[in-house]
Length: 184
Image 1 (tube, rainbow, N blue to C red):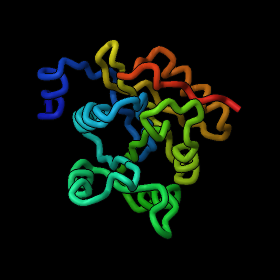
Image 2 (tube, helix red, strand yellow):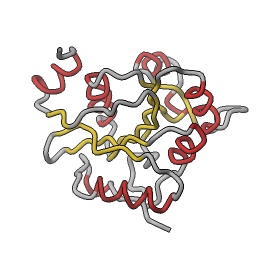
Image 3 (spheres, helix red, strand yellow):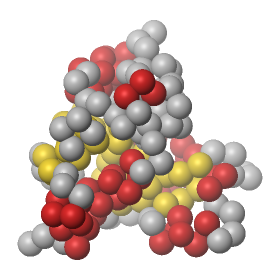
């Protein structure tokens, strides 16, 4: 049964939803590319249609009055530099204390070009012992969906290579601002 979010995304905005969300109870779900502010809306509509319990991570600078009310209604929590709270441990605690939860995060960390992605998403997944779900937005194809799941997290370089392969043909809204993470 299609949700209102799915109807808006597909029938009103003309996007397609590709892939199924995996049958996992908890994950770090990375969403890329994130090259424009509107990406959050398409991502929210797509994730909502997939019917999972999620929380978006957003930079703390977006949580000022009255925007903080909108962000909380959007399903977002503030991270990075929150006094006395490291975002990695904050997320691990959220996941450990939930029966079902998917933390959605943009690994690029910003809408500007980021040749080196923030490694926080990887550390969150490792410390919480949950898989990384790779979700995407492709403006050229007008698709939002799931590319795959990464369960083996022992080697950061190997994980980034897998992620880069999944995103290699994906086009962001501001395509010049999307870059795959460098592999060190």
